[in-house]
Length: 247
Length: 289
Figure (cartoon, rainbow over the protein chains, first blue to last red):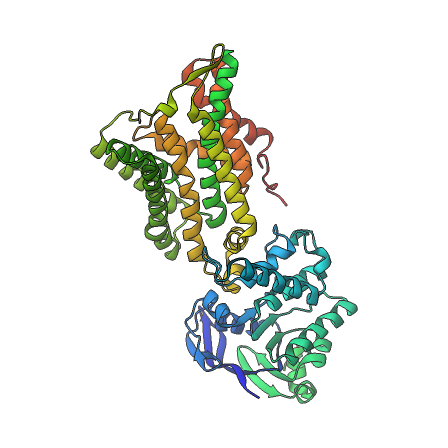
């Protein structure tokens, strides 16, 4: 089992508030790691530190052994880390196809190696991603006109099309009904089977238990526990913290 | 027939306004930079063409030199003025003042080198002939229309089909997200400035061949570009282009009823009418979505 992404001792403060305190994580290839914890635990901040959206006060992160800390967000993405956002950021007034296409061309510039063949390959990649995410039928619709679940799957299609080997997903299943959730879980299982290292922030514990190979439990910016999902979720102290019944 | 003559003159002017306004709208839409120095790009390109013409260069070389100057100036503004301001989180007013300052410098440098007052090139393409009784048209009329349509179509195809065009539209909508997908918003901003600036060059060249330009013409061009962006609907390229055309026609047709000093006023009457009755412009999204 190879480790795709590791981070060690990540720390970040905002004013006097220490949002992340020395977080260390390893994301193995072909596994789903769930980042679980109450609101304000620092889960999204950890994603922002890894992807370069926020600068870390301390700590290191590496992707397949190469350091990525200090890189700009687009450089981290180009290195192979794709992420989704809690607030479902989309190119609202572009079609679904163009939204996905934007993710297939990380070196988008005037000169296109391969010309027409390369363009055809990118289009095929985008079509395959839309098909896999179940949104091929709305490829020509604008993102803003989609239903909520379709927007969620558009977000996933864009991650699929990026062909990244590390996925950082921030509450990707929130607000989905049961059948959409099942589709979403199947999508992640397929990616895991292909060796993608997935890190999932999710409040729906059914989804976590159905998908996660490991759980890292965060509270107040620290990893309190890490291990098998059953063991973590059975821990009464962690359950009390998670459900707001902290003493 | 004077009405038709004015209408055709307005279409010619409008086609050139459309190109310049589309360039401004492209830059503003993609990068959110209020590029007040876009007028200076126009002035610079026009004077480079006149300089090349006077130096006896082949006109095609002059066109290329003007386009290169426009692109170089646009990119220099992005890299040397707007990006450092953005890095220090400067706001709209800082950008506005910096760009306005650069425009004044360009204006004065051009006046120092080329002298003040109108300059033009004496091209046979600008010589009007009577195509119908009392209706005079010069080849430059058709060149203006064809150049505007061809460049706008090329831009539209680029933005809709080329990956970099798709990325530019994406940049216009969500720069953070674009970065999350591995595209450098900095490089795309440079592309937006290069494309937006190059659109001003043919307009400047054709203006230099017809009515002539002076060192302060950029101010008028900038006002028209801003007005066209608002009338067309902020964020809409075809809106800006159509509005540029409309403003050009309005400036010309108003002369049927009013004196020549009202020409520029006509553009702003159209602008005020849109602000009052359709503030979202022709194709712009409503402010409250």
